Length: 248
Image (cartoon, rainbow, N blue to C red; front, side, top):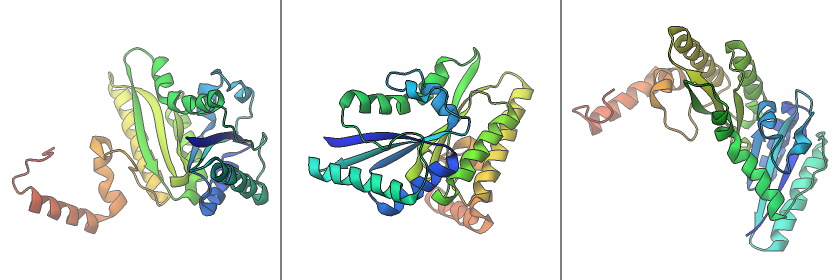
């Protein structure tokens, strides 16, 4: 129960990504969640989050949590995290301050948890909320964030956003999609193709926490190469010679 959180805003996604890398090396945090600019818009009207209003278009935030077996251990991790960020010289747009007040910390994490349902709450009738899950080496996190934003603009996903587990380079993409016309289906197909090629180019994984599923299955060979994919098929044939499991 000894834990506290800081919500730190950076001028750019590059600053947030560099800060994540420094925190990862220091091993002084228990969770670091990234909010892209679109995500900050989503939660700026929530309680304790009004300070997000009016930020520049390039702003990106990190929600950091530190825990400890004792209060002293927790506070030591607060100090180490703050020291790591200050000594890195990375600019922030607000003070680096950890809070233990339950109301404030709950508000921070409620904002993080609300990012998916809030997109669903304002979706157009006839559309579905979709969630993709990708990861890259932390050193490529900023390139991934910028690439996802460019992708949303390119394919017209105005409600799309990206957020997730920065320490692992793992981002979730949430957006709405209709499937009632061939044009909409093609737009989605083209975006998925763009996303998968981008992630592979950044030495990433097309799935980090979620299962591969139908959307990403056609790109397994792109990610792993033909030899590794062939071995996967051989393993499947050994365990499932009659092709009973997931025959599609």
